Amino acid sequence: MRKAILILTAALFASLSISAQDRVNKEPEQLSYKSKEIKNAMYWQQNSETGQWESRKNTKLIYLGEGVAIENFNSLFIGDYQGKRYLFLDFKEYSWHYPALQTEWIYKRMMMAALISEKDYNQMDSLKVGQVLTITPRFYDKMFKGHAEYSFPFFISLCESMRSATETMYNSYKRTNGESYAERYWEKEYPPLTFIVLKRVKTSDGKDVVRFRLYPHAMKELIDTHYFEVEYSVYRNLFKADKKLTYK
Image (cartoon, rainbow, N blue to C red; front, side):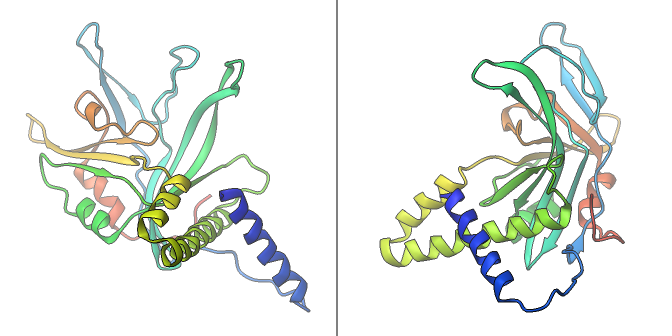
């Protein structure tokens, strides 16, 4: 179904191009609002054998063997585009280069966007000490940053096109087949996934910190033993406007 939407979207763009008589340059797409970024965090995990706590930077990729994905991220921020609010994640995703043979364990740098509701945003903004918050977006998309066509303006434009096309199909199915059918269609296109799990903690030495886990490892069950951690003041970057509206 997503392939069909892409084909329809491409056809629409093609028809618009054909109908245009003049070549007119335009400015690249950009966010109407962008928060400051979280770029630096410490990843903490408790060794199950020794019970000792171990840490590393969020961008450090250690090797733990073939088939083992290392939790990491480069940047996390919030941005608004076309009246929708997204939580953006720049990270390295692991996979087999040859899945059928399970050979050549590699990673690719990805950009991912998750649609967050006003409720999601408000809950993140008002995170309380001791609270565990799980964000499961209704829409999400990602793109390989090494792709020849990748640019952030193209990525956000494609995300919105996909979201809008899916919503149009959803509304059509809802009118003709009912809401339950439409919901099944949406969940087929975007199966539920947990994008981020957050927990605010006051440590024994008085520090106010936020611990979090991210896609594709955002499991609530591990928030107390395997997590990224930043001071609460750094976490507040997600709710402060950045001077720039672009990203690479």
